[in-house]
Image (cartoon, rainbow, N blue to C red; front, side, top):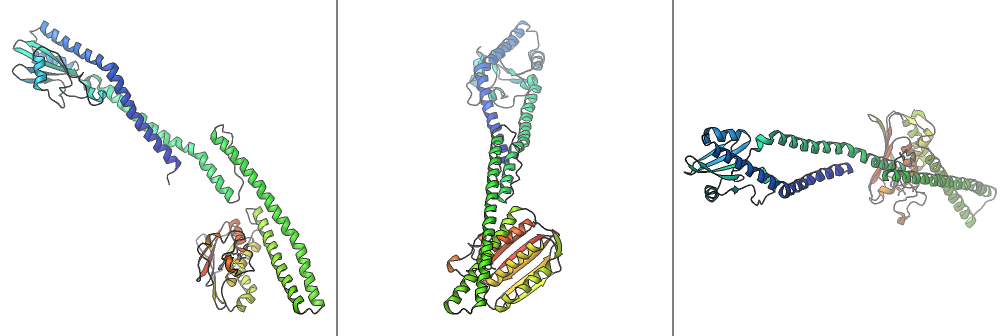
Length: 461
Ligand code: ADP
């Protein structure tokens, strides 16, 4: 992932790189238009002084004393005598040589200005070019004839340390600022990361976002609005939960009395024909509504907390066995084959809620497996978790439905209406209960081949 952190650091590195290039260009222009002519003038002056001094004291040995001494003062010199001999003094020239024309010009008494030549490259870089061409040429009259003396400052000698100091300064500034931006980019990104994790918590229904809102900048603003938004979501979520709980509760009482009356009517009078069928319908429908409102109530109470309301250590294998026994009339009626493999496992959690998990998973397996099919239940202890698996070779779940089966009221394959009895709430209750126990539930399935539901609970909690 290209994170914001990497982006900021990379952007800074690019900015630093391009501004260095731009800085070089600007400095070069400054040198070209302001310093270059001064520099040339100074070099011409130096050349002229060297020449005058020599002409004044011609007894000085030119090649063995005078020019080596001048070189020591910080210049590179290149002497061409009339008979074509060349001698260099001071640090050697690295590259470039003079054309015959250039040498002749000086021999004929004219000053050669190689430093002032129009350069195609950046002037600043040209200034550092250590070549014989990049010199000032001065005609010299010696006791053995004419000569041409080419001279340029020996930069290594004159500004050697300064050059190193400036280079070290620039490099360390660049590297240090890279390092600092890498460190500080974390501070820039940190509040955004906090917001992201707060958003994730809200998605999971945890509204305890503790965002620092004292900052006065845009991030502070964002955090402020975010906190207000969280508050309003929390309030409306609470209202929703209360509403569902109240409605389900209000439903429960009349439904119970309807069921009661139906049973009484049936017991007290012998009802036959259509009326009997109607009573059957009233009974099953009210039973269905009653179980729906019971499930809604369960969900509403589960939504309120993040932790199981009661905690106890109990034998999970025994609980699952009880559920299987309780459902026996259902699986034996359908003549389902049962494969049970339960290790002795002690779990810690709310027994009543976990009972609901196995009940839902196993009744689904029974409900969605045709007569004669097979159902498997396995409970195992893993290194740091408990794994329960409910498997069936029933009708399976289509790939496009699979991601949604844990959503509230989601029923796969509604078009075929193959399970009118379901509410679509069972699996959402399962996933909520498992979540508040700190576990996970996953489903894998193939249409027509069966399904596997795997519950992982933390060992001992
Ligand atoms: P319902 O009350 O409809 O069973 P659930 O939440 O328990 O609601 O399940 C949601 C949907 O997931 C079901 O409607 C069904 O389509 C699918 N489903 C759940 N368990 C199984 C299973 N063992 N085999 C096939 N489909 C299943």
